[in-house]
Image (cartoon, rainbow, N blue to C red):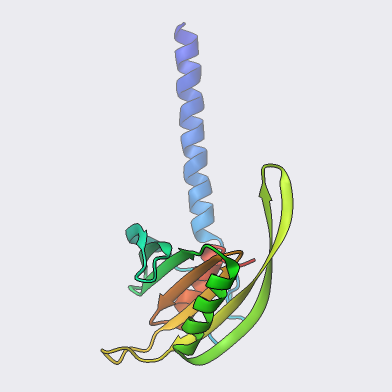
Length: 175
């Protein structure tokens, strides 16, 4: 019995040390990143993001949505929202309305993602739009990324274009 307890404690300590090593290695992984012009920057670390707020609700248009707010390690706030529509046509109408609020479209392309549900694989197609929003009441210009998929819009917004592009990579919003 005593030997079992010692073995379990040894295995647990080994797993704990291995977990710490994996965490440190992940934190130090250097991944090339792109700047706001799409140019590869020198290899560097991605920002770390801390979730500071999250919730679910219904938008004023009656759409179910979830949101999260993050703060990067360099102090930049990133707001995310996912809106779930009843149909793809409802989602398309909303995307077009959001595009009208952009003062500049920086990038727009089609996306394809593989999805497996219950052992069934299928490809889904969507769109990715990177833009700059028209200044709000406080005169702030905000950058955003909209990614559509099925009947859903994923939305990332921040005052820093470089930060939302980094955020998109860290959280693998788009393949």
